Length: 471
Image (cartoon, rainbow, N blue to C red; front, side):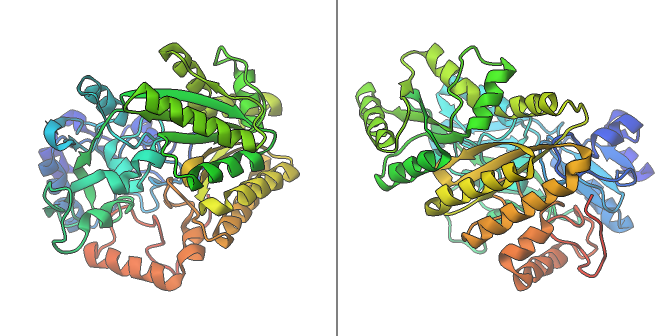
């Protein structure tokens, strides 16, 4: 550490208990570390050059490195299985260059997506992905996240032009130039998106931007059942109707939102679809609203509300924004257990399989007696279940999640649509793609990180023969 202290300012290196604890775990993680699984030091670089120098030293001394951005991930992405160093990129938070005419922007890894959206607002531009609060660009790239806007604007895979990455030996690469399309060589940008810090430390990104819709409204439509709601989603897609977002919240979730008191409106406690409907003119939006109303009506919708003012838009979308907090608070209240934990997990399936998979999964969870609420990015069939459980119910929750994943895979889906694999879903990745595919990933890892120092044991175990315990 003496060598690293020569590189960074004094306040950029820490081994205080508070710093180490805050970089080891969060309440949101579904998989929590043991007391020994924490870093020895946390360092805060300010430039790509800083990161490069740190990686040269870490490789020389074979020190494990966990890159960290925002700490909003859920699957134990920054558990310290090898007790090394955390490289916290939060001080690398500069928006370096806006290319307005080309609809892209160059940012450092520590830029928070909410800060980027605020910066773009005066330019009538937006960045597509919108994950949980506090997420930063480097972590968003590393986990290939998305959010409520993915239906219209895509995931991180569709919104990254190029990356600056520091490799395990300190080499700095840029994956490609700024052109929107290129067939020059391997798709290295795609290789690092979703690599979860196991192949390199992402320090900068050029991101695609989108022009904000000139007109937009919000529609809220409750149904008698999840099956009716998801069938309406399937019908809307089959009609080729282009919407800005299409979200689902189940009846339990609507009940939680009402009980939380976090919104002024009292909601119908039934499975509910939330739509963002945008277009270039009021006429276009009006026609889209009419089409959505007609289709949802065919699937036994209970009513159809849409916003006629900015205040109404904010009100109608508010339930979706407070879903997570409402689930936690209500679950603790019902269980009368302050120590109640939250298992937030996701999967995605082909659209045609959404009605049956989500209905069967909700029934399975309810049959165990666990408290659960459900939201889904319905437009791309990416489902999230918020399972609240006491410490004594941990094993029951784990078994429910395993059945959930198996059900999604049986429907030709994936064990994660946007959360990533991390530490918690390594076995599920093996179920999904098979041993040969995971072995190929391991070969790529070994080719780029021979000493296996970059975020060890995430996505897959560094040593497949090693016995580990699920924490």
